[in-house]
Image 1 (cartoon, rainbow over the protein chains, first blue to last red):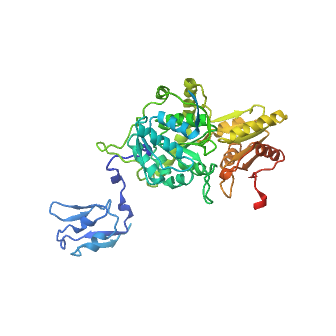
Image 2: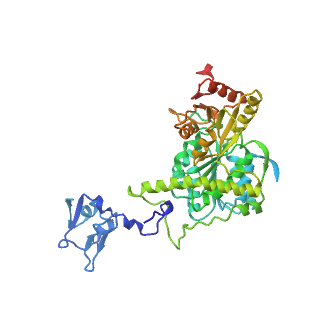
Image 3: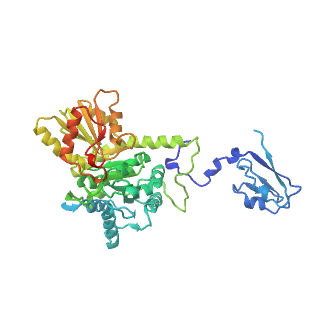
Length: 86
Length: 384
């Protein structure tokens, strides 16, 4: 794809930047403990935690940087950070 | 029409005729008279533009970046400390490929504080991606604004440009200047019509984020645009000459150059003084000539090499210094002549408004003939 002059971009281009590759610790979501409060998706700085049809939450690992804010803030301790082997 | 007018006012008038839609600037000596005049034009209705008053130069150029990205022909002017306060935005404007034109009334950099002329300010931003034009007199200073807009807005270029002229020496000097009519400028300079612009109904962002996989290529493309600008400047100058009779098609200009054994290379108003000194040295039998560099970015390396190929020795005058190295023009000339055996010496002079006289030029030629150079000229040894 040819570069856009002046690095100009239409909306949505940031999706091309898969920030999941930055991750060292991976958040694992335990739906058994989850109370569906939605704190994780509210506080996720990447905006990459999505709600499914049943109301549970899961991160999109293509973009999750592994910052751990969701795990630190989860009132039910339903999210654990695990060192990721690459 | 030929009028005797102050350099700043002649430049302001030329800018008015270019029909900028947004002007944003902060007054600073010796640029002040330009932006005062433009503010008057807007206030009295002779220029249909938005004049955005701001708290400093950083905001002035930032306002221009936004306005240019929104599709407006945009103008600013500054000098010295003001230009340095803008520096971050100077690089960004070029990277976003916004054809903003900015007049630089060249002034020395502090500290120590100096309001007087040298070229350290614009030269220090030579790597920012802006085209850089340098004027010898007020006629050239005004005409280069028309040409700068034509070249900068060319779809194959899309880069901003400095039009530089020596502070006070040109900006505050009254000389005869032929100002074009609105009809003439409208013929030469079409309306600014960028392909992409900020529009809430059709969103786009400028100057986005580039990862290491892309950044190098963006810089390459800017460098390619600079190189293409040589031909575009040539064509824009040629058309200007056809329409109005003054020829700026060459990026360099010779004076008694063809048979010259000793060639002086210089930029800006110092070229006038040098021509007078050359006339006197010619009368005394010395074959001296001048190569004036009008466009510093893109640098006309091939033109310089061709123009100086027959010279026996070359003196380069710099009203700037890359401290710890040499003057910026001397470095370029040495690069252009690399591999040839012509001796090239650089001379630093006129810093912070020190007058450069014909006698200084003659002294430089005498030093060059003795093989001496790469030094300051006119140092007051008694204060060192």
